[in-house]
Amino acid sequence: MADLNVVVAGAGGRMGAANIRAVAAASGMALSGALDRNGAPALGRDAGVLAGLEELGVTVTDDIEAALSGADAILDFTAPGASVALAERAARTGLIHIIGTTGCTEADDARIAQAAKAGARIVKAGNFSLGLNVMMSLVTQAAAKLAGYDIEIVEMHHAKKVDAPSGTALMLGEAAARGRNIALKEHAVRVRDGHTGPREAGSIGFQSLRGGTVVGEHSVILAGPSERLEFSHHAEDRSLFANGAVAALAWARNQPPGLYSMTDVLGL
Image (tube, rainbow, N blue to C red; front, top):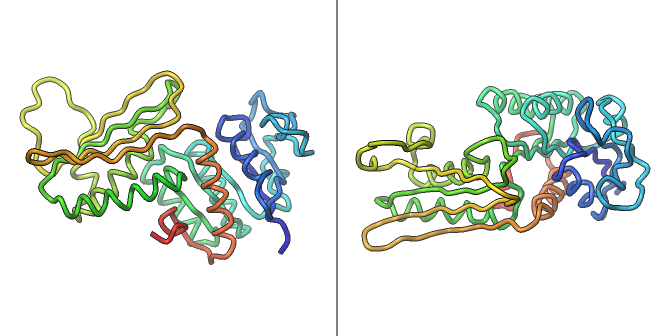
């Protein structure tokens, strides 16, 4: 089977560099393009050198049409507007689109879902860590079995992260809500300040911490009578997200058009 030609979007960022390294190291894949935003410092540089590798002969560009020429797939950890636009382009040409972008609105997600219906093979996840996605499955089971326990989700990321709660925290919240057979948006509590009164039964609380260079830490706490159960995940390097995204790429190659998650990739 021919190599899968992959375009990395957001090539100048830290996740972009990790994705370039992961694609370059993957069997059966080749980096065919590298995209970044208009005016980005990475433009014009070799993507390999930018990611700390030898030259790969792929220049970072803001020309989407040129980058996607001959491509089979897009690996995209960018921003909601860019991801929506790339999903719609993927639909027109039947590309695989791996989306690790967080902070999407319901309207953004609806457009991405429509792109999947229109012909794109999209795997979208707030976190591509294999371990974290297994943890999500365990959280769903625990929330179902411990029905009366209070649920709190705590996450911490680096000081430059722009959205809160993190996409991963929201994924964990959805996993807990799934176990309780409730809608997260109707039970989530994202802010507590002042005299709040007692905790509302059945709510799912979120706390977002920011500082330093933390890659990502997430904990789900189920607090019940006289005991507390905690699930925790600590990301130590961005390569774990890139490796999970590459695994999703390889899996999506053999799937029909549609919108998938890492739950599908891992068969959970």
